[in-house]
Length: 251
Image (cartoon, rainbow, N blue to C red; front, side, top):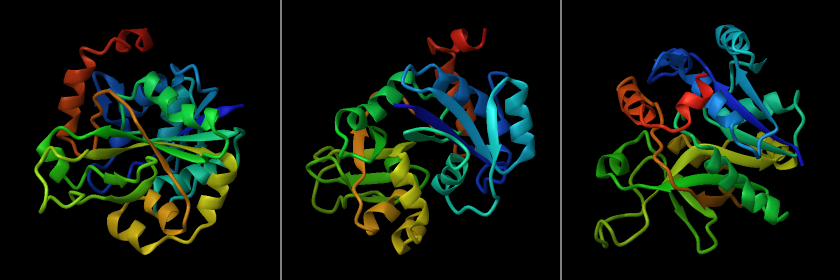
């Protein structure tokens, strides 16, 4: 079974323009993510999906692979779905290009349920939220799940409601930009009409839920700091300085 990781990246981020090529400890962010993804033994191929020639050129200058996509996609999954038309793979991974702290083990965690159970056609990594500021931040998509760990709803607002519970009496979870699709379901997802809750919350996976599909959420460990705004770069650099993988892929 071939597993292909696709990293969507674009320069026109409203919160952080030119973000993919922002240097982090001297190396562009998209290159951190690409090289760390390649370290996963589960992944057979890593490809950047972008609408910006400057990103494609930079990735290829490092020996990476990139494909050009349209600049009209609302969300990253639609960009990956277009790129997947030019790629092969039984399972397509969506790995956001702004997750420079991704660990190979996280990718292994993501794909394991699909390798063990052919009935699961989509998985999404989540981590526990332990910081109140992050729980309140609109940059962190929060999720609620059912008893089988399938997604019920995702929001950039703090959920579930805290009106009738104490801070630590429920599991607070954050969706990561790391998703796995069986290729055939990615094709289905890309053809689904965008949904009201997807657009209101600005979270792609609500589209699947609103159309009646299940998304298995997978809990993983590790410190993940997505680079959403310029101030996140310094936080990521402090973590990377202590990262055991950094020296290996900066050789």
